[in-house]
Amino acid sequence: MIHIKEKFIRLAVFLSFFAAAIFIFSCSDSTSPENGQGQLKITMVDSPAGYDQVNIVVTRVEVHKAESDSTSGWFIINNNTATYDLLRLRNGASAILGNNSLDAGTYSQIRLIIGTGSNVVINGVTYPLEIPSGEQTGIKLNHSFVIESGLLYDLILDFDAERSIVLTGNGQYKLKPVIRVVPLVISGTISGKINPLSAAGYVYAISGIDTSATIAEPFTGSFKLMALLQQTYRVEVYSANPAYNDTTITNVVVVANNNTDLGIITLSEK
Image 1 (cartoon, rainbow, N blue to C red):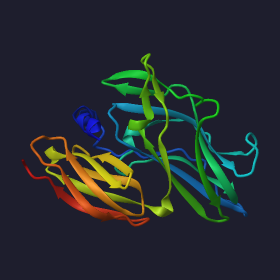
Image 2 (cartoon, one colour):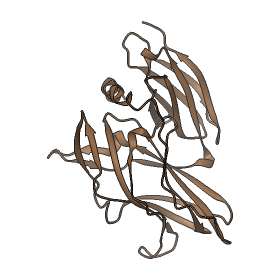
Image 3 (cartoon, one colour):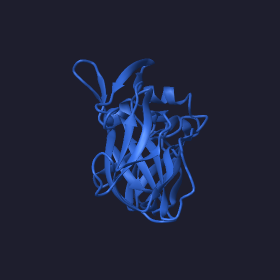
Image 4 (cartoon, helix red, strand yellow):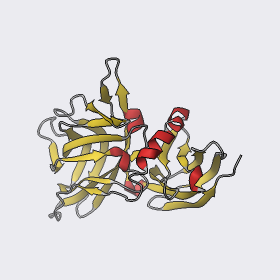
């Protein structure tokens, strides 16, 4: 946690160029479900990381039907190639990876097929980001879910870019994805605003061994933690300014399909 905090000043300078706007990307082949079909929507969000950008090229999104063979059991949700900067997907911003109809039934896996051109930007320098088997077998996520006729199943992929990128001994950056798959129906959010702006920093929601993080927007102090399971959290706020104290808020309850607004959090001067 401390090493992330130490990266804040460099990261916040870069993020300030984007803080004036929230970007919501949409890649969708959505169609009206036919009889015997339901709808699947997959949305991606991310936690902050100590990089300028983390750009992932996704060419196709597929799901696998349970009890089907490994080759013919895949169904395409979206085949429109798009590049996503993971670090913009924070504080309520998200990317729709797919929104399409599917035959009713049980599905067991999701996979993202990766194209060429993924990269990570550090201190203004762009480095290729290797994603092993990304173009062949894709990034596979095991998650069992049921599509019901006439109903929408809404999933959130919570990417953790900080933990997902590994620098190898030969200077190559590799992506070893750390992604939580969270059904929207059992998740909620926590939001708030840090005061004064000069004290804004990282915000963590912690429950047991589960930790989610975001970085307050430099121009507004606002933050929003996404894809939180319905439970009680401890919220820790870390100031990037050494002149201010950090603070902790306990017993923050998240209710599914609801936002818990912590209001204005004022950090005291040391």
